[in-house]
Image (tube, rainbow, N blue to C red; front, side, top):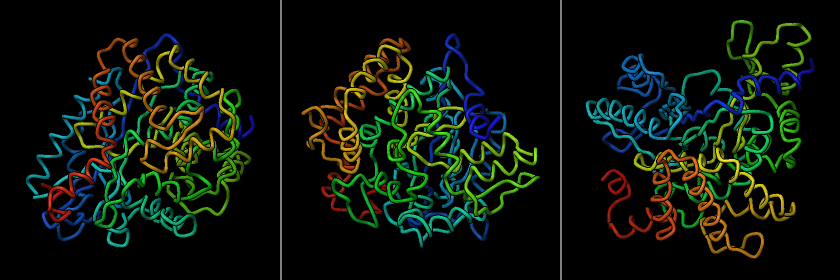
Length: 422
């Protein structure tokens, strides 16, 4: 079996079929600040660190199927158990938030659920003492201009879905890649940059767009265009991306100067290729929609904790109902390539009045697609539509959270650090 086929086989290895309920998982990152409005240290030292927090969370939640990890700048990441309903996800998240708050209250710390650190620059933030992230940091210094911002100063919500079949996968990632501007607009929550307001700039999206062109951005930017061949093209894309790290025989992280494909081919030729090697390669792709042995949606800012389930509801209403998928496929298939490229550019701004494809404004398309999602949630019939519909109503009236927060801050007449943590 070729390396291409082995990667494809790994991606499809957990497909659940059409008669099993598709499960949803989410990963939520947040920043931790001390009482002086500084980010807490990531590595162990004289004061309670993000590493200490991770260890304590793991000890408290060891009977839970949720898990925890640290991002490069000490952002704490909670990964949910796989759930069939959004209500189950919410219960698990609220249990985590209660545990987190109890620890932070004891230490005099505060969590901040936001897309971009509003106060600090990357050089202000300690990097985690972990080989994978040291190598990633080195890579970011050589590729793009904002990779260090991405690693140290951004937080996101990621949504994971089971794969039903190859056809299901290809339809899903095609639609989700086309939805990037909508996801970026609706769920933008990055209003401040280095202590200043950002206006209509979609800041976290801007950072990711300028992180590493070889492995980030949308699938369309890498020539992955056609629904019927999208998995094959995705695998080809993965294999030519420069590697950041590889696994040695004991699963330790090591530096590589080869492409992901060449590293896998060498191991394959020596008959030592493992599924963990393929998994490690797929984790070095940072596109807005990513494939592992599940579908991962990655272009959503971290939102205030009471809004966390809104994007999960929106995406679930679209991905899980065949009728809604068919309607979206009909829309996106009718657009020419230049329409799609123009559409993707709309994600850069939070101005909904910009012209989009088909003579409709960006905001008109957001409304159309959002209504389809709500229709899908109603058809799904699990009582999940209010998680998104209530959020949407607020956004359509007041604008994205990034815009709302800037307006409220200007009205507050407070220093930014006081406003954020008030």
